Image 1 (cartoon, rainbow, N blue to C red):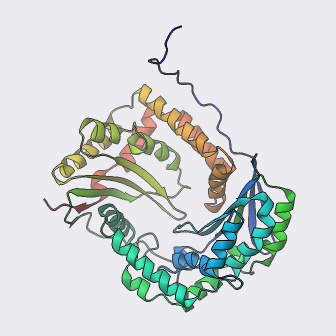
Image 2: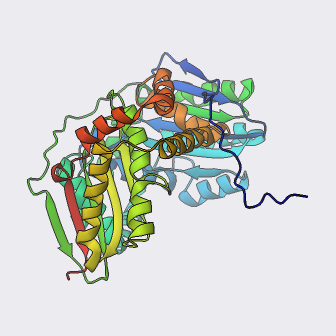
Image 3: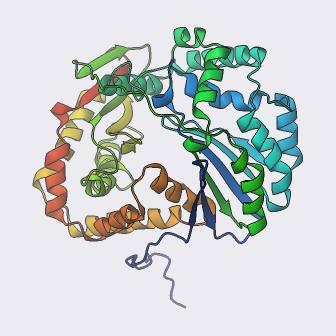
Length: 425
């Protein structure tokens, strides 16, 4: 028998990447429900997403504080009882943080769906916001912040987002002890009552969804949401004048963040930049990894990213290195930018990146819980289903010259902010 272990499997192009079937229902009170019914197991994920993020705050940190406080007590249940009920039914209740939205996510077994909805409804529509729990929450957050500020990478991210958007903008401001000190129950309650309304609400139900589950959700939850809708508050972007900053800290490693504003998902260059970013630094065989980590050994990890929000987006490179290598590392980043502008990407590298990116999209559509993430973003970002297929077609068809043009347009290091936090050598 011939041993083929030393021969890698053939690479075959990915031809078909499609969204699963899904349904959108819109209700007279302004709420909407997205249903992704493609599961084979009797489990569900239910997300209740409100337009109640930072653009809806009258005071800083109210959106995240209000969201996290929902689990700390309601009209019928204490925080302990909420946790006990969720655990009793083998469910999980999460409040993931997002700058644009407030999301309350429930995972559970289909058989317990009718039992969990009354609890879910009470947590979301009738929170108690107990003063003692709010005091404990703020104290815990301030302690966590103290730990976070000892980490170079956290400080570097805070500094670069503030430099790009300004210290007042929802995408730019950072938490601090003073902001936590002025948060009160009245502010939290006002933020909740103004924004947690049907007109601000999108629900996403995914898994093996039955008609009875939908009926139950409509009758026992959606119809009971408070009526009304709020609007985002106006903010202006005020970037800092200084492009390069260095914050010394007593550490061997220096955290480096390089980036700038770019655009939101609706911009026509989004599709090509999504793929160019993959080639540059968004997977293990990317140029930044192969050069700066594998060849030069300047870092253990380096990556680039497009951080796409509802109202804007940023491009950023993140890494950590020793003080002696930081200038050389930045020089190598500049060289990689220049190569993408002036040297055609080799066909083999281009095809490997195409297959990787399409494979990543396929993996993101594997199962109802994963695919619901992509589908909900289509509706929340108001881009339409065709946006996803334009991305797939761009990845399949974009050529070397188009990628070089995008590099010349957006990858200019001197126009970017550079933040370094670490050893002062």
